[in-house]
Length: 328
Image 1 (cartoon, rainbow, N blue to C red):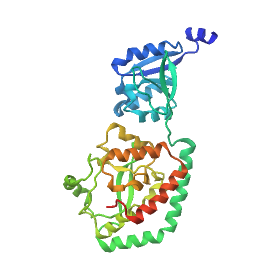
Image 2 (cartoon, one colour):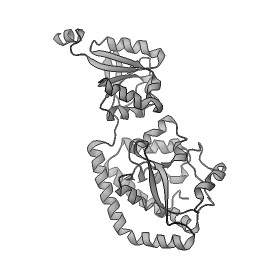
Image 3 (cartoon, rainbow, N blue to C red):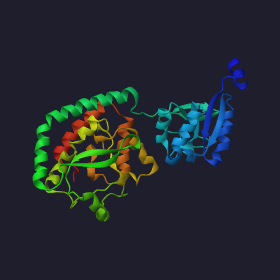
Image 4 (spheres, helix red, strand yellow):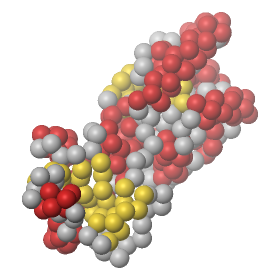
């Protein structure tokens, strides 16, 4: 009773924001006000969660001291990955299904204004988990570099003898939080491969065109074909791991060309360190032609991450590489 009186007097009310589509705003505000425990500092449209507006939106949340944000289900059901942004900002996300809508599986159910609401904290590789993964990656990459050093030297010699051009190939890829970085590979194509790709786009075998996959790519050199069959062209990426730009296991970092074709929900892949191998690589590699299937595998990895999962994927990668499964 005393707590209720204090809330009604505005003594212990909490500052919050509401994010909703226009048709849901009035109803959402009404439900929140029934609780007599929140001070609504602003009501934003669902567009405030889009990539172009997101940074300014979260800056406003922090500037106004909001510790909780209420978002209607309709406004976030196609943007569930944004729950990670709320978590990383230290803000509790409350989802209000103001209409008669199915609830998100695995969410904690609580009541506001007499109606059910959702609260959930998606698994994110942050904090101690991130540190453990980084230590494992650094030690693993160092061991690989030491053991495989004779293989590195042999490959470098073969590339030199096979075709003119540099031994290594560096390409800009998009990594953690959308930051670009240079990924290292052994060169497996002719030196002007990037310029030739545009003329080959019509032969792309992926369904949605996000990834570029071609079964008989004419740009690949003789040694390059062998390197790709056994994924040996990826070995220099241990340097990216040692630099903290990549992990041994995680979603593959993609070139700018691919990322420019992303839909909004695809950017969740950039919330964790990209990897040399991952569930995509041990579940079909180039045989997977639909990027939504790639995303599904990446999400499964992110949501279920454990150190043992990383180890099991690394072990499976060895088998996949030796069988040349889905490689070209």
